[in-house]
Amino acid sequence: MAWPPSPDELIVVDAPEPGGAGGLYRAFGETLRGLKTTFARVVEGPTTIQYPEEKVPVYPRFRGRHRLHRFEDTGLEKCVGCSLCAAACPADCIRVVAAENTPEHRVSAGERYAAVYEINLSRCIFCGYCEVACPFDAITMGHDYEMSDYNRSDLIFTKEMLLQEPFERTPLRAEGE
Amino acid sequence: MISLPFADVTYYEPWWVQIIKAIVIFAVGLQLVPVVLVVERKLLGRFQHRYGPNRVGPFGALQPLADIVKLATKEQFRPRTSIGWLFAIAPVISILTAVAALSLVPFGGVVDIFGTDVGLYGVDVSIGPLYLFAFGAVAFYGIMLGGWSSGSKYSFLGSMRAAAQLISYEVSQGLALVGVVMTAGTLSMSGIVEAQEGMWYVIPQFVGFIIFLTASFAETNRPPFDLVEADAELVGGYNTEYGGGRFASYFFAEYLNVVVVSGIVVTVFFGGWLLPFGIDTPGWLQPFVVLFKMTFFIVFFIWIRATLPRLRYDQLMSFGWKVLLPLATLNALVTAIVVVATD
Image 1 (cartoon, rainbow over the protein chains, first blue to last red):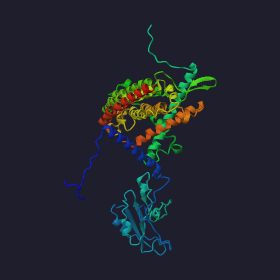
Image 2 (tube, rainbow over the protein chains, first blue to last red):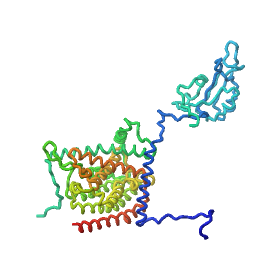
Image 3 (cartoon, each protein chain N blue to C red):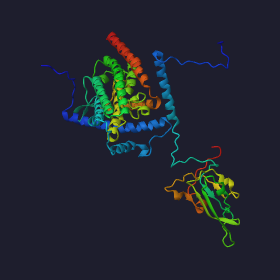
């Protein structure tokens, strides 16, 4: 092999032989180095987020619990009961029963409205296809992720629940954070 | 008339003071263990970017209480293959030897408390280190019998490792102390402390100190020499089959051993209750000085646990016999020559 080796050649540098006085000296030094490494972790401080008290802020595009929306000016529901979300849903967790709007009883801006709108969150996979499928931006994925409950029937969210503002706002991550 | 070869014990106190002393030392030892427990878990957390326990009580200070209550209220059970009375007695041996060794740690000299001379230690025998190693050797029966009588493969392997490990490291530990004993010219623990008036033995006996400390990690089955437990390969080693109060006893003994070893290191190498630069320690301060110094070593034990990985079994053996033992022998030999030459 030519010396000095060309830059493409790999050179195996053998570690010093273990054992002997040199090995002992190195072991001592390496132990001290290890102690320094672990102590640096103490200096850095814990990275734990104390979950129930502190919450991880979510990104703006985080796909949490769904929300249904109303028009801000008229207060009418945006959902027209077209069932496109239910058709797009791969987990088949959305149930929509549409009904006709009448002049006396006007719920949504379109011809029809969703008389029943249920999302079974125990089946939902939070893919966001419903949000994409919706022609009126009536359903969007919100930021809530604390949805555990004690029984499955409580995880079927009705239209009223989805229309409400969440009780507790999930912290949103600031721009560039 | 044959006089039995008993050790000389210097007593300064009446019998009732000795009983009070025994209770106080046991109580202090008992209180230290939960503190060490919670400090260890908190510190290990910090070493790993975590907080450690902080839910039970303020800053998690009541965590050991919760642990002990949980363990004490558990059902006692044993495998059908185990030997009942040995299985029950083994943790007792472990805890007994740990407490007995604690009595050797001097927390101060002889002080005057309400007109009575009281030595701030359990006993001051004329054979201090021998007493220590005697109980260290008996302590190994606790682990050995516990593992063997469990009638389980993992426990048996753990106890076999314990036997080999304790024997190999006790030799080096003993030889490391020989240097100190020769320099001090006494085997009494308080005598050794008093001999360090001018200079703590950690300076002239630095090699001995390192060897003693290393061997102590093996003696107390602490990482990186915790092959006896070796969670990853032996489930829990000798205490695999133990649960509830008996497991708590083993646990207690392990942590008390850490306290004891820290106390011995402080006594033998760091001048016990002596303050540096020849400052005279007032009597009431002496136990606190010892406890303060012990804290450093307890923290060091935890620090090492957070740092070093467990050794492989053959590495452990070759390190003990090929490195520590020759070094300890050399240290004792050189010390002997120096002691004789400067005498």
